[in-house]
Length: 123
Image (cartoon, rainbow, N blue to C red):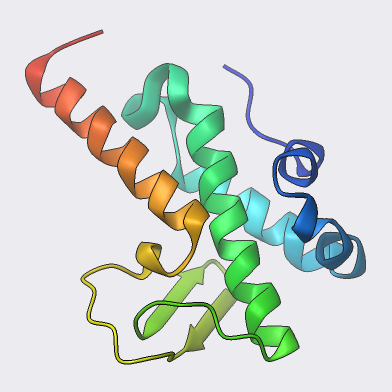
């Protein structure tokens, strides 16, 4: 199973293209850490997709933090390796920082689907 790539991320989330191009080192660090954290043991055939969603989530948080943008969602603290993003926005109450971006929500949904499949024993 192939891992996701910077190009996959740019193609999937074109709004991140300029940020990734301007912050290549950070983007590569995020990608490297995501690949280590998201394995085929947990996601099976969905591994590349889960990696892409999580990388887009982390890069969106980093982009919003660096540009002063405020994504909708709860207080968030996310750390992957040496990259850490912390911010607060709104009064929304949520149990997960993944709720703060559309990509985090997609990752969380995929994670839950794969957890159910693992528990039930579906392939």
